[in-house]
Length: 459
Image 1 (tube, rainbow, N blue to C red):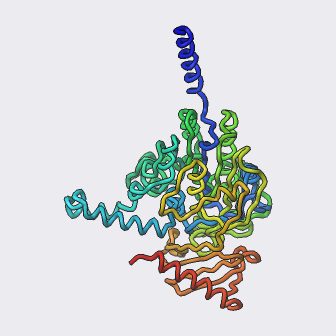
Image 2 (tube, rainbow, N blue to C red; image 1 turned 180 degrees about the horizontal axis):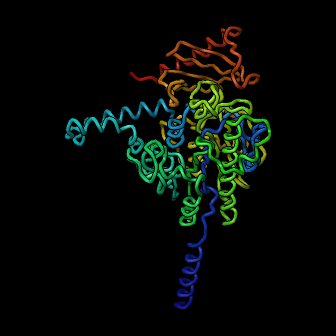
Image 3 (cartoon, helix red, strand yellow; image 1 turned 180 degrees about the vertical axis):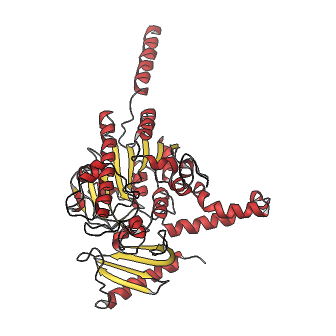
């Protein structure tokens, strides 16, 4: 009997040791890679019907799972959209909560003991450091044993503020550091080198943490300006009669596509692909048709056509959203349901068995992804506090709102007292204002915005 017990102990020890070296393949803890395009307009993918832009790796990803063609982000520029992805909150709700936290902190002994100059600096810097007081999706994933890595675009000072266990963005100073000016540091610092320079930092993280489920925030600064792709990507588009700015932008789109393809191949070679959930979303839209020339126009060179980034037209907010997970999500599915980018963190948490936070706007679309139901969202309302300005590439401050319902897109710039209505099924670039012909529809959508605004605005 003693010999049998000893043998059992030895066998159990061997099993434990062997299992400790195996990758976690539990279907409830897949590896998760959130891929975020930077200034990638929804029309400029092969899988979205583009006849101009070459995106074979993204086409393969879109065809390998469920593609939502009517996805929307909440704002027309990147930082508020990225805050929404990591917190699940609308920008307007994030701002309201941040202001509440700010007010609470002003009553603490730590703040009250500061001198006048230090209080002034604290007020100026608080927005940059505010995310650390929020519950974030990467932080919640740690409850399920996830290791997480931030790389690419990240405005929130330090990766730890987002609840990541590891990352590339580690603070900034206003003086130049490592050759980077302040603005580049502010966008993510060394994190913005991912893809453009190398994918190696994310590879190193995965190799180090492959025994645990991992979450990757993969947000290369592509196809975002500067348009400095390797020549081989420009060569794809030369001699086709495209404008110079179109060639430059499309080349950056192909550059993004290629570095993503390299990342996916890395996972396949290391037998990590099958148990990885891939999700794709843009941060905001962009307009660059093949005949539009912006190369000598500084504002449009940085922001694209007037219907894209920093506008309040459909192209500025619309994004494809992709979910792909081999053998778990059926391939080749295209859906037209209205979905919101804040649905992504809610869905991720649902898939791994966690509840979303009470202040999350988005809802899990797991059942839709698995073909078990249809979307019940009939409209999406958003607001923007920035709009195009010919004097400043960063835009000017406004109070503006928009709504998508069925085939209608309505916008309302309160600051400039402008509103317009578009049938985006027949006019996707919002070139023909239909408000005169459909005043009752415009009024109904404006009323919906007015009600939403009253619920959201805090004095």
